[in-house]
Length: 363
Image 1: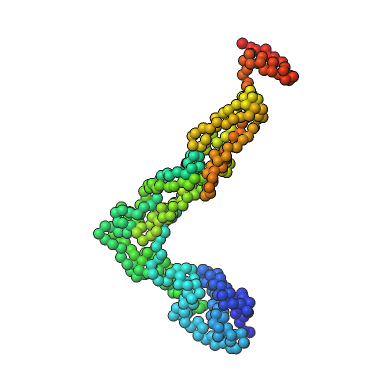
Image 2: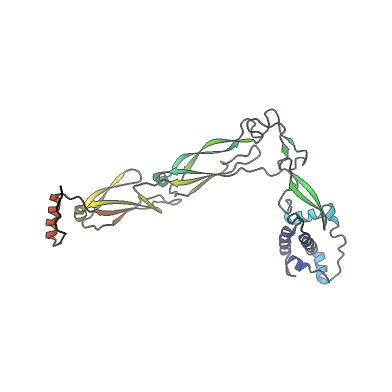
């Protein structure tokens, strides 16, 4: 019975070349012997997928297969021993091969790790923006060896194992014959170079730990949790590498005068009973440490609210500011003098109110 190459790849007979290639890429990653060591069934599935792709990816072979012609597959895998399978995988996955490791040339220049640090700012700094200095500890390029890792007066030399390529080709025998895999060179860890006499300052690592100070511009309107990204200000890796990024997480310190709600600020204050009844003028604090006068109309009730436009937080990334919301409560006295009590009782009498009777005062 003829082999069903379409079924082997899990595609329909009218599948496009792109669909066939995509199906083989998936199956190759799942069943490749390097990803399933010691699993003969996975190796057999890989062989079937490779054979199916080799037939269906060639227009002439596919046309012959669809017509039901007999295919001479005697030399289909004949080139595998000479690297044919490796060439097949590179044609599908690119020069990096099945698992993305370059077959030649030194490993890509390493990248330093990103660094996260947190900094506190005042509510006013968050509202109007501020230039601040951020201190953090991270790896910096060694200033003795200039990031080479080699002792001054010496230099790195080409790795004798990989001849500077940073990779090794490893032959592995299987059902498909000899398959070539590409791995990172174990001698130089993919750098393509080794150090015979390491720098004493950094012990050959090309970097060492040091505290750094970086200036940061805090944009107006930030909130707690806002992260600012400074490219290439993170961990260094040496002369060949690229530094990671620095992330500065903002934490806005609470201000006892205000409660923040988005772009608005709320300020709570209180007035006396007489002031609430007759009206008064109070002073309200502003973010810039200034104060403004606010007229309280007569007859306000507890929890009276008014808005002062444009005195809240700056809107992050937008124009304008939020509002300052002022909430006014009424303070009821609890320590009345005899004279004050007498006046209040007279007031209650005029208002036809019925307060509780007098309580004996103990000296």
